[in-house]
Length: 449
Image (cartoon, rainbow, N blue to C red; front, top):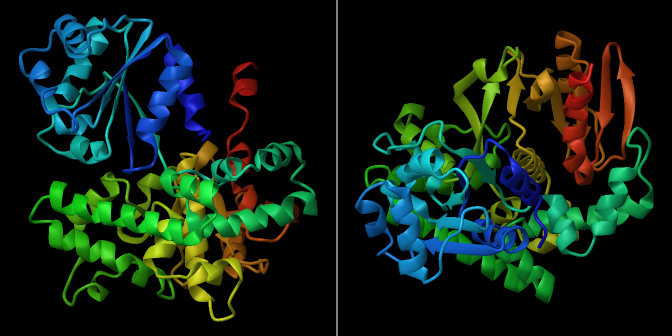
């Protein structure tokens, strides 16, 4: 299955200032698969080592940090084939289980920069965040991988022509039914199936929804097992509390994560470490409040007030016990949670495009679903599950802060309206993968001035 991250991997490979690459991402989002494919396509040889599968690998790094010796033992001794800088891609998978291997990346950077090295791991984000980890600061490049985005899902289903055709359209005008009708159908499927590669693969190969849900259940059980195996014992009950509460919290009217609703007397600071563990593992996306939107938004965020979403809409759908027919066929009783699921979809797509986001709420209660300063300007994003795009809160925000451009994303067709100094762009949910081209100005034309 084609993944967008391949472009970034090729860019890394060809950089003159390349350093060893750290690839992080939630478990089972396809890191190992894409690295093997990248190696096959771009290198004459791939030397792959997995620290979880082979516990003798750690001893190679225990002796010292001489990279010539390490490369020789990994190549000639361990796999019986020499590792050649410039020709071989060295992959160190599940590196979070060997802290000395993680530290060794500093010495690969300094003493063997010509060798292409990629380190990956399902819980690498958790390992990096530990205070006692000797992290090679300034000696690595970093890249994060996410579950398959909507456009990747459509490609996997055979709809590449729709994605490429949509890219060519002028989205100032309405999108023809030729694109909108099938893409809305794909969008409903994506809500149910999500972007976990094994789940998508199961659907593409069988088109049997019961097998899809079985695969989703397996992944969710694997995540729960990770809690017991890798999380600090003291944080384990809190991690389970947060994880189990997400579907219920999203069903609330304002979606805000209220700790007292998880457990009586529970406060935000009591669960900070558990929330951080789940975030570092890539399992959840916290969305923080901004009341005074000034650039940079990260400096204005209220980190004590937030909503929590899951990294994959399909897994959220499954954990919430939403039957696939409710989404695919429609149900009049499926109202409020439909909005929460749509918001989760939007945030997952923003993250897959590496777009940072917050939400805004005024003292009077007006609320905008997402706010980003990508590209150096404020951009509010209002989300609607259907084609009703009346957004009083967005109007309040635009009248008060006068952003140059705002976005509404829903099932309504594309188009533009001008309100005072703000251009409001309607971008359909199925075209959200094109958002970044509107947010980020053409840097190359700026640099050429």
